[in-house]
Amino acid sequence: MALGLLAGVLLLPLLAFNWVTAPGLLILCPLRAVTAIPCPSCGLTRALAHLERGHWAEAVRFHPFAPLVFLLVLALIIMLVFELATGRVVIGNPLKSRRDVYLVFGGLVVFQVVRTVIFFLAGGWNVFWHENLFARLLALAKTVF
Amino acid sequence: MIKMEVAMSEVTQDARRIPYFKNEPFIVLLLGFITCGLYLIFWNIKMAEVINAVVEKEVITAPIAIFSGCCFPVNLYFYYLVGQNLEVIGRKVGNPSLQDQSVLLIVLGFFAPMVSAMIVQGEINKLYN
Image 1: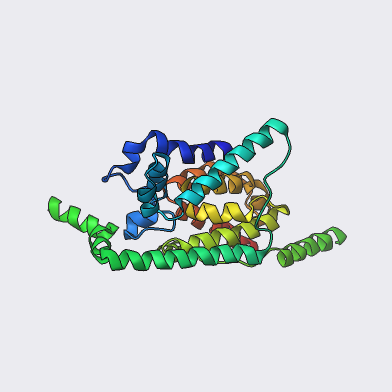
Image 2: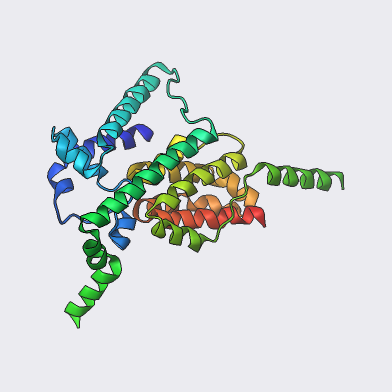
C-alpha cells in the first residue's frame, strides 16, 4: 500500500498534468476549500507536475519544497522496491528522538507562518474574503435568490 | 479478587504508560482551521505517540505522522495504520465494535481528514475516563 501511494504521488501529477494544473480545478484540500488560505502542503501536486515536466521555476513557485519532496519520494520508492525484492529492511526511522520530531515540526510551523504572511502580503486578503467557503455560499445564495 | 487486582494494576500501568492527550473533538477541528493545518500535524504526532503506547509497539512512526499531516496521500496511510489497530484500541476503550469504523476512517481521511481526526480523538478520550 505504501508503495502504491508513493508511486501515485509521482505518477498522478505526471500523467494528469493538464488536469492537475487546470486553474478551475476542484480544491481537494479541506482547509483551503473552507478558509481559502493554503495549508503547508497546498500546491505540492501542481509543483510536482511542473517539476516532472522540467519547469523548475514554476515548481518552486507553487511549493518551495517540491524538489526535496520529489527526491525523498523517489528514494523511498527505490528503497521499498529493494526491500520487497531482497527482503532486507533498509528504511529506518530517521526521527527517533522526540527532540528531532519537534524540530521538524517547528520547521514546518516557521514555513507555514512565512508562507501565510507572504500570501497575505501578495494580495491574499482579497482571496481570503472572496474565496472562503462562506463567501462562496453567500455568492451562490445571491445568484439563486 | 486477585484477578481483579491484577486487572486493576494493568489498567493503572497502562494509564501511566499512555501519554495524556485528551481534547474535545470539536477543538481539533477548530484549531485545525485556525492554525491552517499546523495543529493537525501536531495532532498526528501526539496521536501516533498515544496509539503506539496503546498497541505497545511502534505502528506509526514519527515521519509518517508528520508527513500525513501535510501530504495528502500519506494521511490515507496514517488512517489505514490507525484502522489496522482499531481492534486493540477498541478493546482498551471498551468499544469492541470500533474496528468496524476502519473503512470509514480511510474514506473520511480522503475527503475530510479532520473529521477522521475527530472520530479518533473521541475514541481515544475514552482511555482517560
